[in-house]
Amino acid sequence: MYAGAGMWDKAKQVRETMSALGIKKIPGIVNVTVKSFNETTPKARWVANNTDHKEYSLIEKTLMNMFALLKNNGYVVDRRWLLQESDNPDECFHSEMLAIAWALVNSPTHTAIFLSKNLRICGNCHEASKLVSVLYGRDIYARDANRHHHFSDGKCSCGGYW
Ligand SMILES: [Zn+2]
Ligand SMILES: [Zn+2]
Image 1 (cartoon, rainbow, N blue to C red):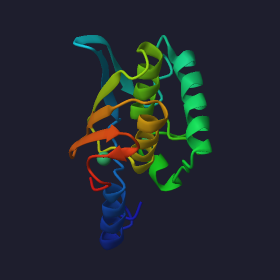
Image 2 (image 1 turned 45 degrees about the vertical axis):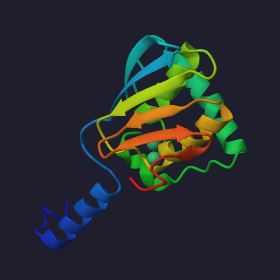
Image 3 (image 1 turned 180 degrees about the horizontal axis):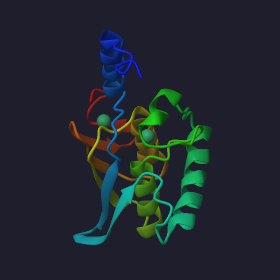
Image 4 (image 1 turned 45 degrees about the horizontal axis):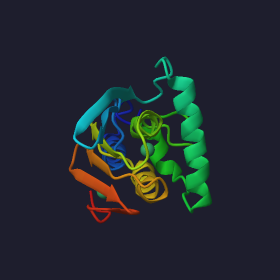
């Protein structure tokens, strides 16, 4: 809009703010797998708002239960991140959350979860992953566009810098 009106400085500023928040036009895609003992079990690929996935209603229900548990344990959604992929004003339905819910459904307790994402992980999903690691007893290994994260026991190996 600013660019169209010839207000280049303003447009540049908006673009910089958007990229600082991780807002991009390409959709977030997460590949997920779960590993139990020395065997690698099912894999899935999640795109934000992937409602036509065959397990979607189960995953959505799991995700809502998961968010309720997280909120009881201090999780608060920061709305500044929500523009990135999801249109839901109240929840972070980003692909990594769908992927984690899928992994919770498809693997036994304490199974580690492995994710790789084409974009930078958002602040809400980062916070949620820390809480899932402690509340569900799951180690989560995530590779995003910038770096590796290992969520374990309520903390991330990146120390909050990514
Ligand atoms: Zn998110
Ligand atoms: Zn991290």
